[in-house]
Image 1 (cartoon, rainbow, N blue to C red):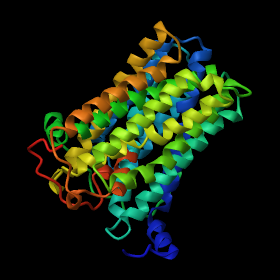
Image 2: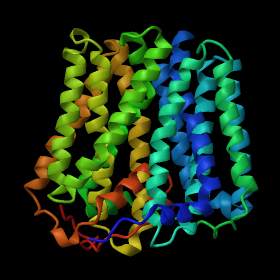
Image 3: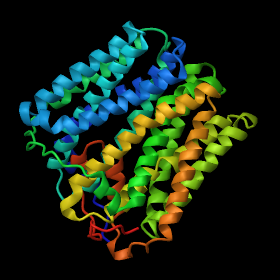
Image 4: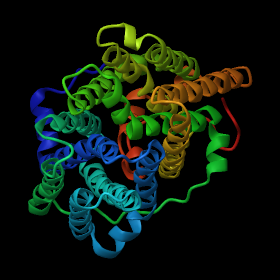
Length: 432
């Protein structure tokens, strides 16, 4: 086993992309604040659960469209111009939310925000990917993943800085997004090569790995609903000093739980059949959701405790499913596979919040975790069925979970397809 690179090597690898990572931090902090703020403000404005669910779906719909069209924009105008335009539009939409409370306008604005952020992330990740080498790519994108999780948490905690019913928090979100343009605009790094579009074939993707495709779709259905509706769930149930504090703390502990759960679960999946690890992890998410439904109110700070464990088990499923799909992908199919997984996640994240919000409208906010429980249960049953149909991937053909974790945490097919891995099985036949 090779020794870990010394700190000086890591710092030298990060130096050429430091400005880009600062831009990422500011972008995600602003987006994290918006993600927690908007559902809470929508509830204050008396929007219905279905309207809030559509709000969440709108973001992922715009995000998916942005990912599919980002390459064309960058090819036409270049990385810097596209980045600046997307920042300006995303910053503007954050402010317009505070000026107009009409739900349909909010859906359009949120979809526009998702579209902009998809383009922004694609520009940054393609830039990072080109600056990385085979020797330092793992270090660069590991730091990138840590930054994602850290600043997302900080952005959500910014809810504590003001009243969601007032203008300042929207202004803060806009300021953070606007500031993200400065490091990249002043960077002396040469712009990367034009981004290439990838063809997407979902049928072929399913044939490569039914469990991988189903797992990513299920994560979109479950976690897309969580991101859209968990803030109003927390505001209504968590025992904190104020709804805003409840939302900030709840969302943060879930993200922290997800960060903690990634590596031990991922390392386990490198040592045994990933499908079995996916089943165990999904069962853990089911148990956390069930506890949230049945006993959270009876345990002091139970919503926070079981929210943390939902993050531990619910968030790593995406990376496990991605790793399993990668085990069955030929090197020539990296970009196509990553693009397809991104689309599958987006489809689930568009449908999930709407379905969950409809159920909530006929029951109560607890139904959010009832929906998540149902989705994870179907995933477990499907994966159990697939285990009986095909043998596990041989150890020598399994890729590294670390590469899949980077792919699952990034947002563009350019980056999600990068990184060294072992050769898998042929893509034409179902293999799990």
